[in-house]
Image 1 (tube, rainbow over the protein chains, first blue to last red):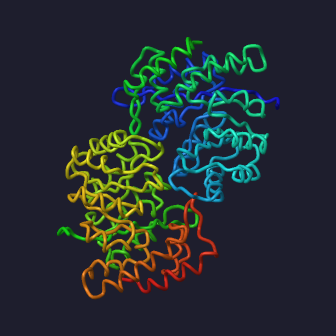
Image 2 (cartoon, rainbow over the protein chains, first blue to last red):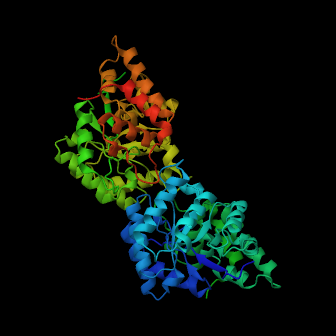
Image 3 (tube, chains in turn cyan, orange):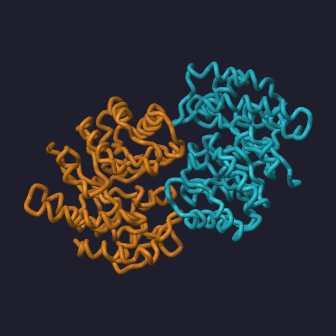
Length: 299
Length: 299
């Protein structure tokens, strides 16, 4: 185990108003609640945040609102990866100028079957354009992007950009891959996408987790991180894993939003943008169960 | 066979300057050459055009340049489908305002495993926002988008929007799917993505083809369409299929651009944006062969 900080970054959901515009007030309130509950930081505008369903202007305005609400930019790792380099550059430059700790960057994800060299070129043109202040957390989510962040690609990027490659989020669900990344690149912060994996991640030398379900269960996930190696680890791990398991049987993002809505007693928080659809009555009991297991998660 | 017009729409490549900015001069010149060679129209800003690697501003400016060069907007079906609805609406409204025949619209393609209802909602919000003048050609390319345009989805869209659903491009390479779409929805124009399939497409009641390799072989593909049922059909079909077969063994888009570059004696036409990479020397002989089989393709 290294001496790195172990952290929970929450990929905060993006609430929508009835007309599906971004509900900035609810967004900031939820973000503040997550920080109050013990999140080390937020990784907004990722998959859970429906970021690719937002315009560039919406993403930048919502990030500005978080910062203006008083959240330290050093606790923010916003997602910025788009298909078009110009868009990724615009978002990454904006986040960097606002002082964010780094950005979580998808590779361009329309073309499939592309080479590591092509994906390297794509990242390189962004980093070269944004400049030396940019810190990149690579986003490995091949089941959505169709473009994996392979070990050879990570090596090429670190060789060229050194410490500007700050970390990686492994959303593949493949622990063997996460373990291989941590072993090969101990100098970067590697996050698991499930809180169930926190003990393994940390034992292997990883940096913690960035998990969709931490929108629902932030306080207990933080308690697990703080309690690693202590007498409560097993109970805390059992609780977070139980919540996670409920969500794994459901359409993940709509279910997370429905659970947050239930926790806050605010049905509007459950709204999603197409192509996602709200969870129906068929899943209501499961959502209730996740919320019940999570228990009070206030700050 | 219906009495519909059988047409070739070319998904024109997007040339780039040495700094990878859009080379508008080369773009317009190539587009004009395709029209002179007999294309019925152009379907720019699709997969072959690397449209998702362009910003919204670049896409709109390049479409404006085509129209300002004198190409009839009624011969243009630009691609407009992005992940964010606001972006798709902006591009579709722009193309509609410029008088384009319609737009070729990808579904939002980041999220995978979404329901037909969710994809329907995504299309519906675009059509409702852009208005009654919009004509939509659905873009089925599941190997890239990860989001198929299913028959039940097409039915839902036609039931709601009638003639605003103008057609479909089937880039799946699955002839059985194309045949099923044509049989179920004879009221829309269904295009194959390979010129090899033109005889089958037309016999079944389809509308022709929108094919990447028509950037290289437009004149002969047009001749095949004009010669369907005539004495030269077999020879023409043999030629277009032979050219197509060469490309199917290569990285398609870089190979198409390399072949166009070879035809025009202009190496700059081969440039691609990341994550694509230019074809290397290993494929040079195959590119030469495709160009040789195609033969002179000028207007």
